[in-house]
Image (cartoon, rainbow, N blue to C red; front, side, top):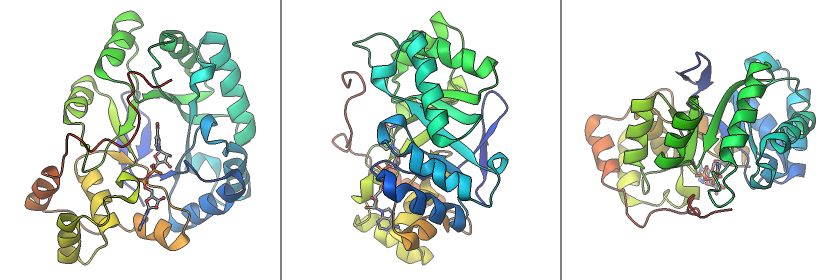
Length: 273
Ligand code: NAD
């Protein structure tokens, strides 16, 4: 079973979850079912992934009750704004076939539209109404987080950001720790590109683990929530077998050295719309 991280609102999220970006809707049922069978209890989807219906099918068919699962989805950029956020939330919940969500995130800040404050107010209302247990953001940079705090005064439970050994986001992680925001790593395996790294392979050999397991263990050891994706049942199961070892400080230090100023894979949150 995954350990959990406690949010600033008192709720808890499993530290290791399952991400379904780029999983087609038709494949989402099988992938999520494989993940739940392997022991995952946290699933990360988004309206933009267009697979909420397939995820909902897996949840409805699962023998694990909804109260034991932790479901995250995200507000898409085009739906930002107060009323449109409330409508988008209803649409996502309907597709997921849930009455209540565990975590709703604003997917990107989209500063060019400047609607994230209104969207955040809508998330606060949804939480007050008990329709979502926890609310957070994704891809927010320090100035965006500072604005939420200064202008609305409600700090997100979590910020889901690109984070892997080649893009470690130390400054943002330190800010999160100071402000009581949990850090969630997207593309925790660097979309698979880090698995051939010789330094990681050497550490994997030392523990008798795979490179993917070592990277996920690194995330857990430094306090991140991580949501690796795979559609291959054997890899889905492999990625969950990381609770029986811990990295020694020298191995964590060796992975810290892989941080790379050119290591970012995804778009720039300041300009992405
Ligand atoms: P990831 O780092 O999880 O890598 C996934 C890829 O790594 C797989 O497609 C596969 O090719 C490979 N892989 C996984 N396990 C493996 C194993 N054991 N052995 C060998 N290869 C393996 O990348 P991701 O899918 O981009 O990110 C994970 C999740 O993060 C997504 O599914 C999504 O839920 C979330 N995400 C969020 C955002 C955002 O903007 N909030 C952006 C990207 C991803």
